[in-house]
Amino acid sequence: MDQQKITAYGDELYEAWLACRPVRPLLEREPDITIEDAYQIQERFVARRVQAGETIIGKKIGATSKPVQDFLGVYQPDFGMLLSGMVYQEGDTIDLATLIQPKAEAELAFVLKADLKGPGITAMDVIRATDYVLPCFEIVDSRITDWKIKIQDTVADNASCGVYVLGKTRGDPRKLDITLAGMVLEKNGELFSTGVGAAVQGSPANAVAWLANTLGELGIPFKAGEVILSGSQSALVPVVDGDELVCTVGGLGTCSVKFSGRSKA
Amino acid sequence: MSMNVTLGREDIVRLCERVEGAQTRAYAIPKLTDEYPNMTIGDGYAVQLELRRRFLAQGHRQVGWKAGLTSKAKMIQMGVNVPSIGFLTDRMARPENSAIKTSDLVHPRVECEVAFVMKKTLKGPNCTRQDVLDATDYVLPAVEIIDSRFSGFKFDLPSVVADNGSSARFVGGGRARYPADIDLRTLGVVMEKNGEIVTLGASAAVLGHPAEAIAMLVNILAELGEELPAGSFVMSGGITEAIPVKPGDSIVARFQELGSVSMRFIE
Image (cartoon, rainbow over all chains, first blue to last red; front, side, top):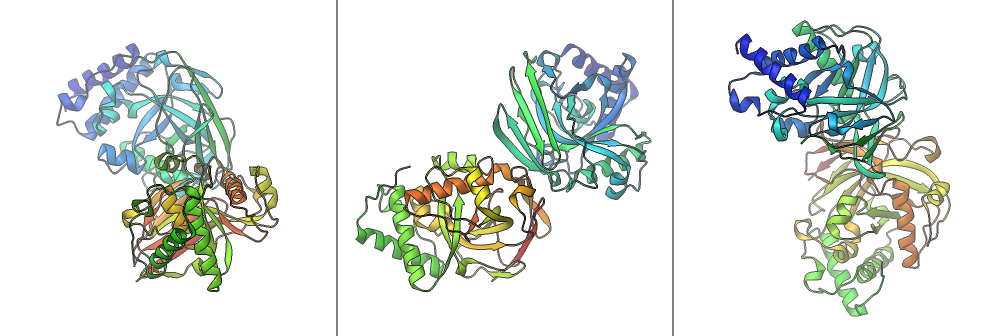
């Protein structure tokens, strides 16, 4: 795909995000778009947000579970960039008017204390480089109409990242069994779904290692202090005005978030 | 739940013999309600208790109970708001890491469960989650091998209760823990078949907390005029969906804080 088109699609997604107005699937218009093209479109989309004043503060890993991979027809994860404008604190209320068609996912977040430079990174290196882990919610959102996404669409759209909320309880992966830690997700006081760390690539640390190696090949830095959302351990939860979600990571703690207002789609 | 028994003694014995034959000789039968459409849950328990009487008379030893239909999804599917229960005997127990025969089963499936071993006798009604935790000696991980004797695993509640809640085999193992030392609500669980993750979840999938299922089991026992004796081994219900197994399959169930339970299946 030529640079002009990449820039145009990146700009289109940026404008869609800014206006909260979704666009037609890119793949419907460009059937030959590759995953590499899609990452270049993502780079442009993110660059526009950075130009407008945000900073890159971490990464998210997506498409980590078997059901999502089956749905997208891909058998590896994808990634997107976390930007400073995406951060909410635990207990905050998220204004749905800033989103298009949000859904929540319960995840384990990693905060690094050392750089991870792939290729050649293993899960053991990830644990060694991890400062702490946190329960978190990622609120995914799609700038593509009705979530009609293929892998190229979601990659171009910054891996469908919306906003995220980090819990306050920090865990040490040397003390917490991050692979077998249970994930319990409640919506408005009722059990919604359960999961476990192993749902993410066999272990969330494997997903982070995959990211370090992938970024290494692409020459994208992965620095100490960055936040990494390691992939969903729950079912996707559609959210509406008044909803309150709580996720609990067994042996670690909880993260809670509330929603108000109306999303755009 | 009503434990109203509508069938006469003769019909109960007849249905019990039918279930016993299917269980001992491993063949599938149509669900009992095909012939007795008005059969109640109380009738189902009457057949189950008759089955237990016969097994005990043959020298089997009852070791405890199991709760079934403990997930919200299964309850909605069956149109019930309480779990079902079944009895467990020494003949159903298999050691950890053993080879389990399938030729004496119809269509076995495996589920991950948290099991409780009781140190005090519990008696309903009004048994609570806290009563259960206070009466528990220890918890341990378990795999239940269920095997409905009904064709295609197709049944309704009276039929499955009569079939002893599809109980067939069970394997307890892993690491025994005091319930007070761990959070029983949030235990993560992974089941691997032949090295591949086939299903997973966390223990809250069982009625929000596995001890809740044991409390309900104790209250159902009270309706049947029974108590849960000290020393009982009690399985609290599947955290994960039931996975079919066949000869050659190897199963490992991994539990947060409780270790793992493994077994393999042979002809």
